[in-house]
Length: 252
Image (cartoon, rainbow, N blue to C red; front, side):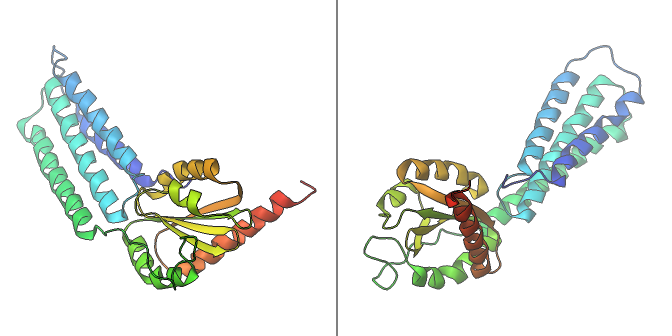
Protein backbone atom coordinates (compact mmCIF):
# COMPACT_ATOMS: atom_id res chain seq x y z
CA UNK A 1 0.00 0.00 0.00
CA UNK A 2 1.57 3.29 -1.10
CA UNK A 3 -0.20 5.60 1.34
CA UNK A 4 -0.59 4.61 4.96
CA UNK A 5 -2.99 6.04 7.56
CA UNK A 6 -1.04 8.47 9.75
CA UNK A 7 -1.48 9.66 13.30
CA UNK A 8 -3.22 12.72 11.83
CA UNK A 9 -6.35 10.64 11.33
CA UNK A 10 -6.87 10.50 15.12
CA UNK A 11 -6.89 14.27 15.68
CA UNK A 12 -10.45 14.95 14.35
CA UNK A 13 -11.90 12.13 16.46
CA UNK A 14 -10.09 13.40 19.56
CA UNK A 15 -11.52 16.88 18.97
CA UNK A 16 -14.99 15.41 18.45
CA UNK A 17 -14.84 13.49 21.74
CA UNK A 18 -13.54 16.60 23.51
CA UNK A 19 -16.49 18.60 22.23
CA UNK A 20 -18.97 15.96 23.43
CA UNK A 21 -17.50 15.60 26.94
CA UNK A 22 -19.81 18.18 28.61
CA UNK A 23 -22.82 16.12 27.56
CA UNK A 24 -22.50 13.90 30.63
CA UNK A 25 -21.87 16.75 33.08
CA UNK A 26 -24.99 18.89 32.60
CA UNK A 27 -28.75 18.17 32.73
CA UNK A 28 -30.27 16.92 29.48
CA UNK A 29 -33.02 18.70 27.58
CA UNK A 30 -36.27 16.96 26.71
CA UNK A 31 -35.94 17.26 22.91
CA UNK A 32 -33.33 15.52 20.76
CA UNK A 33 -33.83 17.91 17.85
CA UNK A 34 -31.74 19.65 16.55
CA UNK A 35 -28.95 18.21 18.71
CA UNK A 36 -28.86 14.91 16.84
CA UNK A 37 -28.56 16.74 13.50
CA UNK A 38 -25.54 18.66 14.79
CA UNK A 39 -24.06 15.40 16.08
CA UNK A 40 -24.41 13.64 12.71
CA UNK A 41 -22.86 16.65 10.98
CA UNK A 42 -19.96 16.62 13.46
CA UNK A 43 -19.38 12.90 12.86
CA UNK A 44 -19.40 13.44 9.09
CA UNK A 45 -16.89 16.29 9.30
CA UNK A 46 -14.62 14.30 11.61
CA UNK A 47 -14.71 11.39 9.16
CA UNK A 48 -13.88 13.68 6.24
CA UNK A 49 -10.98 15.20 8.18
CA UNK A 50 -9.69 11.74 9.09
CA UNK A 51 -9.75 10.63 5.45
CA UNK A 52 -7.95 13.80 4.40
CA UNK A 53 -4.93 12.63 6.42
CA UNK A 54 -4.30 10.26 3.48
CA UNK A 55 -4.55 12.93 0.77
CA UNK A 56 -1.59 13.18 -1.65
CA UNK A 57 -0.64 16.76 -0.72
CA UNK A 58 2.26 18.34 1.11
CA UNK A 59 2.55 17.67 4.86
CA UNK A 60 1.88 21.28 5.87
CA UNK A 61 -1.27 21.53 3.76
CA UNK A 62 -2.45 18.13 5.02
CA UNK A 63 -2.03 19.13 8.68
CA UNK A 64 -3.86 22.42 8.16
CA UNK A 65 -6.79 20.74 6.39
CA UNK A 66 -7.12 18.00 9.01
CA UNK A 67 -6.89 20.49 11.87
CA UNK A 68 -9.32 22.92 10.23
CA UNK A 69 -11.97 20.28 9.53
CA UNK A 70 -11.38 18.75 12.97
CA UNK A 71 -12.00 22.11 14.67
CA UNK A 72 -15.18 22.49 12.61
CA UNK A 73 -16.27 19.07 13.86
CA UNK A 74 -15.50 20.20 17.43
CA UNK A 75 -17.62 23.31 16.87
CA UNK A 76 -20.58 21.24 15.65
CA UNK A 77 -20.12 18.86 18.58
CA UNK A 78 -20.39 21.86 20.92
CA UNK A 79 -23.59 22.93 19.13
CA UNK A 80 -24.94 19.41 19.54
CA UNK A 81 -24.20 19.40 23.28
CA UNK A 82 -25.74 22.88 23.66
CA UNK A 83 -28.94 21.63 22.01
CA UNK A 84 -29.06 18.40 24.03
CA UNK A 85 -28.03 19.76 27.45
CA UNK A 86 -28.25 23.01 29.44
CA UNK A 87 -24.79 24.53 29.20
CA UNK A 88 -23.46 27.73 30.76
CA UNK A 89 -23.03 30.53 28.17
CA UNK A 90 -19.23 30.60 28.45
CA UNK A 91 -18.90 26.92 27.60
CA UNK A 92 -21.25 27.25 24.64
CA UNK A 93 -19.05 30.03 23.21
CA UNK A 94 -16.11 27.63 22.84
CA UNK A 95 -17.73 26.22 19.71
CA UNK A 96 -17.66 29.63 18.05
CA UNK A 97 -13.98 30.13 18.83
CA UNK A 98 -13.22 26.65 17.48
CA UNK A 99 -15.11 27.43 14.26
CA UNK A 100 -13.10 30.64 13.87
CA UNK A 101 -9.81 28.78 14.39
CA UNK A 102 -10.92 26.08 11.94
CA UNK A 103 -11.73 28.67 9.29
CA UNK A 104 -8.28 30.24 9.74
CA UNK A 105 -6.65 26.81 9.29
CA UNK A 106 -8.63 26.12 6.12
CA UNK A 107 -7.77 29.54 4.66
CA UNK A 108 -4.10 28.94 5.47
CA UNK A 109 -4.26 25.50 3.81
CA UNK A 110 -5.79 26.99 0.67
CA UNK A 111 -3.15 29.72 0.63
CA UNK A 112 -0.36 27.16 0.98
CA UNK A 113 -1.84 25.05 -1.83
CA UNK A 114 -2.08 27.99 -4.21
CA UNK A 115 1.30 29.43 -3.28
CA UNK A 116 3.11 26.13 -3.68
CA UNK A 117 1.19 24.91 -6.71
CA UNK A 118 3.68 23.81 -9.35
CA UNK A 119 2.81 23.58 -13.05
CA UNK A 120 3.54 20.21 -14.67
CA UNK A 121 6.94 19.77 -16.28
CA UNK A 122 6.57 19.43 -20.07
CA UNK A 123 8.50 16.80 -22.06
CA UNK A 124 11.68 17.93 -23.78
CA UNK A 125 11.73 18.19 -27.54
CA UNK A 126 14.71 17.75 -29.83
CA UNK A 127 16.71 14.88 -31.26
CA UNK A 128 19.20 14.81 -28.38
CA UNK A 129 16.38 14.14 -25.89
CA UNK A 130 14.22 11.69 -27.85
CA UNK A 131 14.76 8.48 -29.73
CA UNK A 132 12.98 7.91 -33.07
CA UNK A 133 10.12 6.10 -31.32
CA UNK A 134 9.05 9.23 -29.45
CA UNK A 135 10.07 8.29 -25.90
CA UNK A 136 12.52 10.54 -24.07
CA UNK A 137 15.98 9.16 -23.29
CA UNK A 138 18.38 9.26 -20.33
CA UNK A 139 19.77 12.61 -21.48
CA UNK A 140 16.30 14.11 -21.13
CA UNK A 141 15.93 12.55 -17.68
CA UNK A 142 19.25 14.04 -16.57
CA UNK A 143 18.21 17.45 -17.90
CA UNK A 144 14.85 17.31 -16.12
CA UNK A 145 16.17 15.83 -12.86
CA UNK A 146 16.64 19.16 -10.98
CA UNK A 147 13.11 20.29 -11.90
CA UNK A 148 11.61 16.92 -10.97
CA UNK A 149 13.41 16.88 -7.61
CA UNK A 150 12.18 20.39 -6.80
CA UNK A 151 8.65 19.51 -7.87
CA UNK A 152 8.61 16.29 -5.81
CA UNK A 153 9.56 18.27 -2.69
CA UNK A 154 6.32 20.21 -3.13
CA UNK A 155 3.97 17.44 -4.20
CA UNK A 156 4.66 13.69 -4.46
CA UNK A 157 5.47 12.11 -7.80
CA UNK A 158 5.27 8.41 -8.61
CA UNK A 159 8.04 6.59 -10.48
CA UNK A 160 6.98 3.47 -12.41
CA UNK A 161 9.74 1.29 -13.85
CA UNK A 162 8.77 -1.61 -16.11
CA UNK A 163 10.44 -4.35 -18.10
CA UNK A 164 8.82 -5.17 -21.44
CA UNK A 165 9.86 -7.40 -24.29
CA UNK A 166 12.95 -6.29 -26.29
CA UNK A 167 12.14 -3.92 -29.12
CA UNK A 168 8.87 -2.82 -27.51
CA UNK A 169 7.32 0.12 -29.38
CA UNK A 170 6.61 2.89 -26.82
CA UNK A 171 3.59 4.17 -28.75
CA UNK A 172 1.07 1.99 -26.84
CA UNK A 173 2.65 3.12 -23.58
CA UNK A 174 2.37 6.78 -24.56
CA UNK A 175 -1.31 6.27 -25.45
CA UNK A 176 -1.90 4.75 -21.99
CA UNK A 177 -0.61 7.83 -20.17
CA UNK A 178 -2.69 10.85 -19.23
CA UNK A 179 -1.98 14.57 -19.16
CA UNK A 180 1.53 15.53 -18.06
CA UNK A 181 2.86 12.01 -17.36
CA UNK A 182 6.39 11.53 -18.74
CA UNK A 183 7.89 8.47 -20.47
CA UNK A 184 11.60 7.62 -20.70
CA UNK A 185 13.34 4.68 -22.37
CA UNK A 186 16.01 3.63 -19.86
CA UNK A 187 17.44 0.70 -21.84
CA UNK A 188 16.29 -1.97 -24.28
CA UNK A 189 12.77 -2.92 -23.19
CA UNK A 190 12.95 -0.92 -19.93
CA UNK A 191 10.77 2.19 -19.56
CA UNK A 192 10.31 4.74 -16.78
CA UNK A 193 6.99 6.53 -16.32
CA UNK A 194 6.79 9.58 -14.04
CA UNK A 195 3.27 10.45 -12.85
CA UNK A 196 3.02 14.16 -12.09
CA UNK A 197 -0.64 14.29 -11.00
CA UNK A 198 -2.80 12.19 -8.71
CA UNK A 199 -0.16 11.06 -6.23
CA UNK A 200 0.36 7.40 -5.30
CA UNK A 201 -3.32 6.58 -5.87
CA UNK A 202 -2.82 7.18 -9.60
CA UNK A 203 -0.38 4.27 -9.95
CA UNK A 204 -3.03 1.54 -9.87
CA UNK A 205 -5.15 2.78 -12.81
CA UNK A 206 -2.02 3.49 -14.86
CA UNK A 207 -0.69 -0.03 -14.27
CA UNK A 208 -4.02 -1.50 -15.37
CA UNK A 209 -3.95 0.50 -18.60
CA UNK A 210 -0.32 -0.46 -19.25
CA UNK A 211 -1.00 -4.16 -18.67
CA UNK A 212 -3.80 -3.99 -21.21
CA UNK A 213 -1.59 -2.14 -23.73
CA UNK A 214 1.76 -3.96 -23.57
CA UNK A 215 3.06 -7.30 -22.21
CA UNK A 216 4.80 -6.37 -18.94
CA UNK A 217 7.43 -8.87 -17.81
CA UNK A 218 8.14 -7.08 -14.50
CA UNK A 219 7.35 -3.72 -12.94
CA UNK A 220 7.77 -1.77 -9.72
CA UNK A 221 6.74 1.63 -8.34
CA UNK A 222 8.12 4.16 -5.88
CA UNK A 223 6.57 7.34 -4.43
CA UNK A 224 9.12 10.13 -4.90
CA UNK A 225 8.92 13.02 -2.44
CA UNK A 226 12.19 14.77 -3.19
CA UNK A 227 15.87 14.17 -2.69
CA UNK A 228 18.11 12.51 -5.25
CA UNK A 229 16.30 11.23 -8.32
CA UNK A 230 19.41 9.21 -9.21
CA UNK A 231 19.27 7.28 -5.92
CA UNK A 232 15.54 6.67 -6.33
CA UNK A 233 16.16 5.25 -9.82
CA UNK A 234 18.98 3.04 -8.55
CA UNK A 235 16.59 1.61 -5.94
CA UNK A 236 13.91 1.04 -8.58
CA UNK A 237 16.32 -0.63 -11.00
CA UNK A 238 17.60 -2.97 -8.28
CA UNK A 239 14.02 -3.93 -7.35
CA UNK A 240 13.07 -4.46 -11.00
CA UNK A 241 16.11 -6.68 -11.63
CA UNK A 242 15.26 -8.80 -8.60
CA UNK A 243 11.61 -9.15 -9.63
CA UNK A 244 12.57 -10.00 -13.22
CA UNK A 245 15.07 -12.65 -12.10
CA UNK A 246 12.52 -14.27 -9.79
CA UNK A 247 9.83 -14.32 -12.49
CA UNK A 248 12.16 -15.76 -15.15
CA UNK A 249 13.77 -18.35 -12.86
CA UNK A 250 12.83 -21.80 -14.26
CA UNK A 251 12.63 -23.15 -10.71
CA UNK A 252 9.64 -20.89 -9.92
